[in-house]
Picture 1: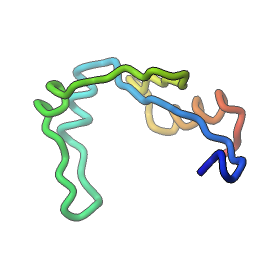
Picture 2: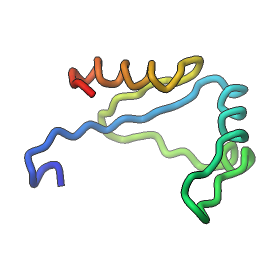
Picture 3: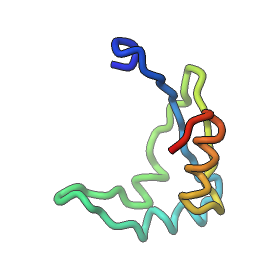
Picture 4: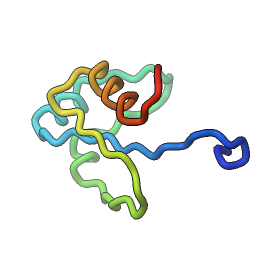
Length: 81
């Protein structure tokens, strides 16, 4: 769709490099979509991860509030929220 509309498109991978923080986030989050099952910590740690095979931006969210990640993303991409 981005190509068809001549819109900017950026692939962004978010990760949390701190396993303790990642587990805490995963096990304490709530769902806001009725009927959507959340993965368990075991589901998360046992999933297969396929590394990205094309250029993309990677941001580590460990130790940062969401607002910091948003600022980092918009600054890196040179866009205003």
